[in-house]
Length: 147
Image (cartoon, rainbow, N blue to C red; front, side):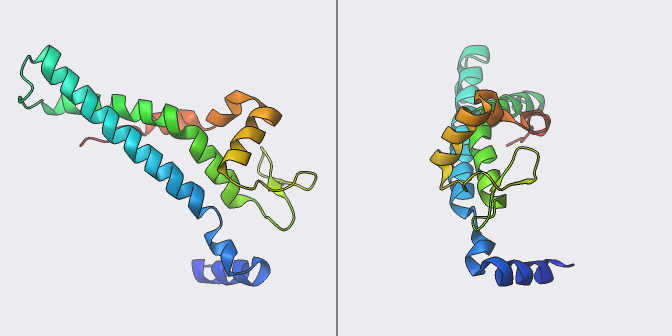
């Protein structure tokens, strides 16, 4: 099926609102991620210029910029992965029937998550704190974002 057929099926089965399920958590995650990355990248760049180059107005070379950006990316991933994990679960759950389980199958014994905070607290309670960072490995590989 193409995207339009799939969207039509979702809307017919679960209502139009199902097409937008999880948008709030995506906005929260994206806002937090952009803030953490921007702040960290600029802080690392300023620190490098001040303490290594001894000139806050100096330009840094491409390789250093890449290393600074990658370092900021690592901090961003580690700080915001829990929000992305919660967002993914909120997006894929079927509110009428089930919540998403760890292995991607439907778990008919659990009530659906009600929001980001509910999702985060239930993940910690039911699966442990480490479950908030599931999938962090591949994200760390993709952190390079030269600015």
